Image 1: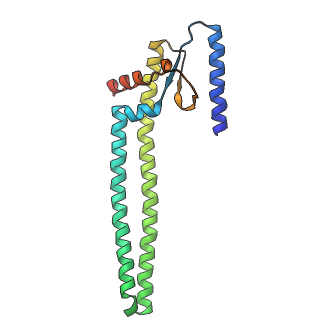
Image 2: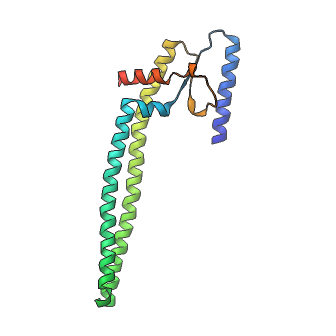
Image 3: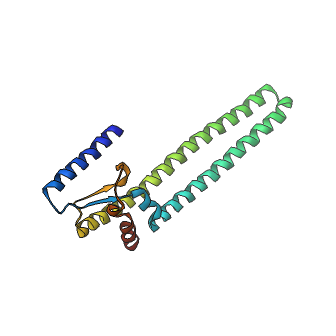
Amino acid sequence: MRMLKTVFISAIFFFSFVAASYTQDFKLGVVDLQRVVEASNSGKKIKEEITKKGKKMEGDLSAKREEIENLKKKLEREAQVMSKEQRDTKEREVDIKIYDFKVLEKKYKEELFKFQNEKLDGMKKEIFEIVQELGKKGGYTLVIEKLGVLYSPETVDITEELIKQYNAKY
């Protein structure tokens, strides 16, 4: 996958420079999407929502973890005075709670991951709309993401302009 991405980016640059040799008006723009997400008002709000939801889930999990630990301690204290059947029953209860905890933990991780992706996908769609507008208005031939770019001069970086327009629109 990484190799494919590298080949794709290399092809883009190759064709960009080929196109540049045929036209004098070639204009390249580079955007750091990670910085847009981190610095924009909407990105900060999304990060806050994700953090809030994550902390709530972690609080629930901590309460369940504490409950399991208390049951284990109680079982250890009372194990000597319990019959074998009682002890086995309590151990099964603890095992069930541990299993339930693991299932809940997995569910929460999946929910948080899905929530994060939904929020960021929506934001990326909005960003791409603005990049389209910015590219057309600015006369850019090509606007690429900085993620796969090994070098680009600051003069082609349009991230700050994108952040300004994104904050103004959303």
